[in-house]
Image (cartoon, rainbow, N blue to C red; front, side, top):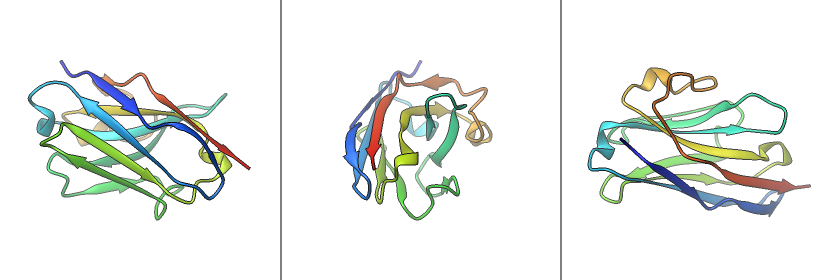
Length: 125
């Protein structure tokens, strides 16, 4: 079992920055691919970014590439999402996800084993 707790959301003006954190319980954090997804009001949940087990590879949605950076600290059982140059369309609830397989880290994240409860990011125009 893995429990995920996100933090760092809030209200920020367009062009601003936020860093989300996701703390994971358990001793096998490095066994999981970690990802971030988001869901805006009235829209389906969508993939934002993922990072492989040791952090060697990262993947991003085209809408955030160049603005967001995912990273992980396996010693702290934590994954981060640094979000820069935020836009109003980035407004959403952001969810942390964990799964042994990278194959699930795409689209709406169907089949992902573990999810956090989400943290709200609101970008004002």
